[in-house]
Amino acid sequence: MKGKPSLFGGACIIASVCVGAGMLGLPSAGAGAWTTWSVIAISLTMAVMTISGWMLLEAFKHYDLKVSFDTVTKDMLGDNVNRINNLAVYFVGGILLYAYVTSSGIILEGMFNINSKIASVLFVLLFSGFVWHSTRAVDRISVVLIVFMVLSFVFGVSGLALNVDTSILFDTMNKETSYAPYAMAMLPVALTSFGYHHSVSSMRAYYGEERRAKYAILGGTVIALSLYLIWLVAIYGNLSRNEFGPVIAQGGNVDVLLATLGSVIASEEVKSAINTFSMAAILSSFIGVGLGLFDFLADFFKFEDTKEGRAKTWAATFLPPLILSILFPFGFVIAIGYAGAAATVWTCIIPALLVRKARQREDNDKGFKAPGGNAMIGLVMVFGIFTALFHIMSMLGMLPVFTG
Image (cartoon, rainbow, N blue to C red; front, side):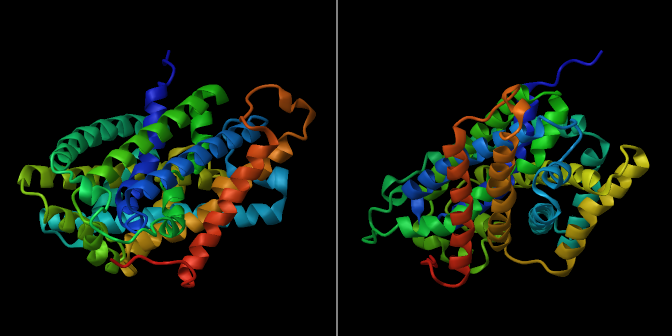
């Protein structure tokens, strides 16, 4: 008889979905807002994203454990809303996989002197196998990767932490005081950094109930937030605000960030630990995001849970991002920003609408309920709408853009 899945394993899956985008995107995205406002932005986002995930759990509780967004949204909100949501879910999952595949190729090229496109293909063929196999396999590899990341993170960041300069960390040498406006443009990347919602159905099916899934989600977002805060303090305490200019000019590409960071680190061992950590962060998020998108597409296309059915789902999940990565590689943070704007649909707006509809049912009082009542539904929806607006305004040049 199989034992119950551990809460730590589930929390690691949720954390692993988040950390790739967050760890590698937040430092560049938050360079304008700098330390204090970046911390405020990501802490607020974590709270909202955790509650919106719980809202999905409440809405899903009326359905079979195997369902995902497609079935529930179509039933509760109708075909038109469901089409918009499906498009947003697939776009965000696809663009995140695309960003991870592209970045992994670039980093592996530097580490092993192998062509980046060949490295990307090998990366996908090797590591997407865990997703094809089962959620249990993803649980196991996620725990290994999180532990591996923590070890390389502790070793790498401890080297950075020893050199943290508070005058750099709080930008006291700079006379500029307008940090807050830059935090608005940072929110879409912060939202993507907690965009685990396509994995909510996977967690519910994994545990067979909402209550344990709720704690796995909370554990995962707390792990992610803790890593983000330590990482930002370590980087912002070593790299001055102006040194982010070249990184931002290159679209926030991970290799440029790592090279810039490497230029201020004296120890080769610390440099290697930071590079290893970054690769593990990309890999864990690739597998975590891949699992969520895999389950979503299996539900959408009604592919069977057989070897042949899972092979079809694998192809629909991983081949389009891989092909696009080979043909059209571009900036990491740019891709994450687009993902964040589209993700507001299914991380904020749809969960709020679904739970509002679910609470109109007579039998909704039984079982799991997300906290905060109707006021929280309004707050989650407003947060999502404003985050999407900030991204559009930033693209149109209506928000201040930090260039270093």
